[in-house]
Length: 333
Image 1 (tube, rainbow, N blue to C red):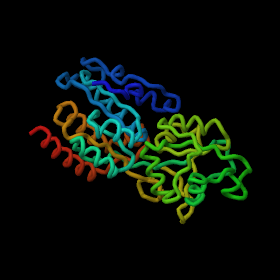
Image 2 (cartoon, rainbow, N blue to C red):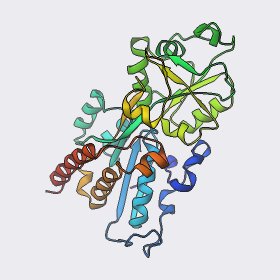
Image 3 (cartoon, rainbow, N blue to C red):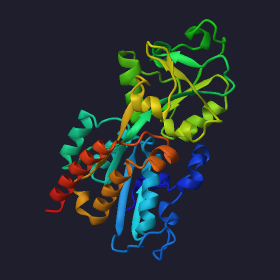
Image 4 (tube, one colour):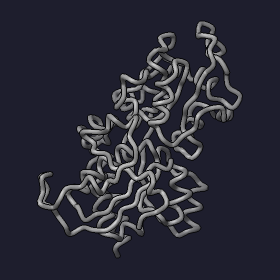
């Protein structure tokens, strides 16, 4: 059941290669699985088989691919396909037209997407995956800036933006601002507009991409560049980039697992989601993976230590499992 987004299929060996995300190319996740006789400590369960197709958010992608890798090692007959299409691109081009089993999203599903799913008979449930600190980054050589106010951030990214840094703050250099950010199919783009830009819109004068590693490369290559993406990509590459503190009125707060968890990193801390199709949950391998995914959302070593997001609380996990089990029961009646 491979689809047109296979070109971006990737299965990164998490414990060895997540730190290489800034330069990673597409890899076949199925090729990373182990044989059923079990060097991974699992029982080599061959009872599950079949495809699991997942598209959507590039922000959720590192977490989803890490959890999928572990699941695929335990179930080597499962054929996973995890890709980065952007939250909106995943909903409109794949999930809501019935081509994928899950859609990852860095913001809640939007009304137009709900309508598209309804038109195509695609029912789903919303599951919270983790908490992210949307991170604004500059080049490490940019020693003239450590933080920005929300207003200054808006000046840089609004529809008619500042062109040089000294237009944002007098003491900044008279150098052209180079912008790297999320494409308009991205949930990160939508979240940024809703929580920073508002009615000021978003400039088209920037390098737009669904590949967060491309943003990282662009910013690391220019002293006067700025970009934004999910915290995981900074967390995995802290020496290549400089994260800015954001001042929402009470002084600058730097992005971190702690400030995202507490809500202190305002307004850029946010929930991350995945949406399984209820019809797809009728397939045993899809239902089993959905359960496994929710079970792993409280795994601090994986979610925080390996990927760089805030794990779900036990209470949230229990709520998500209850929602999921109801959907699985509905699917398998």
